[in-house]
Image (tube, rainbow, N blue to C red; front, side):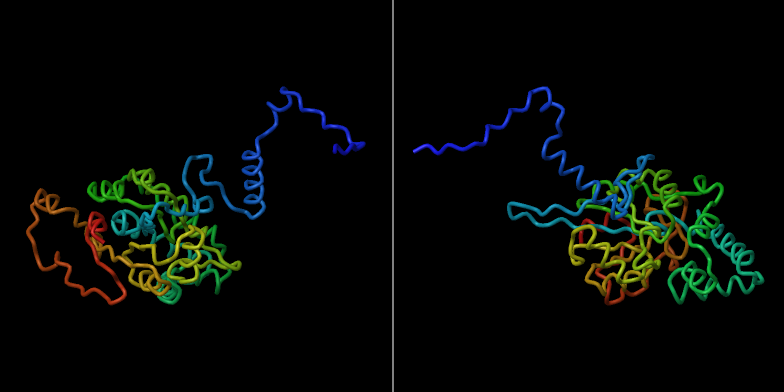
Length: 304
């Protein structure tokens, strides 16, 4: 039996109109972009082409019984390049001058404040923000301009090649500002080998800056990247940051190539420079229990 109704059949959409209508997939993508914009999430690439933290995609789940890949988190200064030679000296001078001018203390008191806040908070900036009302963006801009930085930058070609061939996703996690980090990465040819750059501007939680070694921030990074902390490896030169990473379940690797401000390079580099092995060149520092390894070159990561 056929039931009759008063409803008329829908009028088919003309092909010309269907051609201009976005597909369901395109509509979902547009909705997702609108949601990210409402939440204040940055796109994965800015107008300049750099990769940024806010748009890092969560890791896709592996299929077919494959082992999940490692997510590598690399510090920048004195881990991927010789910052003691290129930046730290000029940066310390700039910070001292900034504190003298904006806090109103003598150069000696400024140096004491810088060291005090570094030891207490892990970053001089945090002490200045909390106790002196300094604006973080202004401080970072004024103290990281560093004229002539590009000419002083240096890294190991072997480390650059090892980073390029290292399997897994790779992110920079640095307490430095974004403009400085991108200058370093672009000049050294490292930016194209990483999947994202996480800088101090991205380390705000509950309205306050939470740079390394804040364990809550490290846990949040893993969550935003869509991986459990146990699958993350932090490669750093600063032991306090590595200890915090281990406390949240990450593996911690101590990079020692630039330890003490000495650019070791490779054995061939040393031989070409006429250097002779000495006690000062040997890495005699014992490995703390919270580290899974201490390395002198990025190629050693492939054996972890």
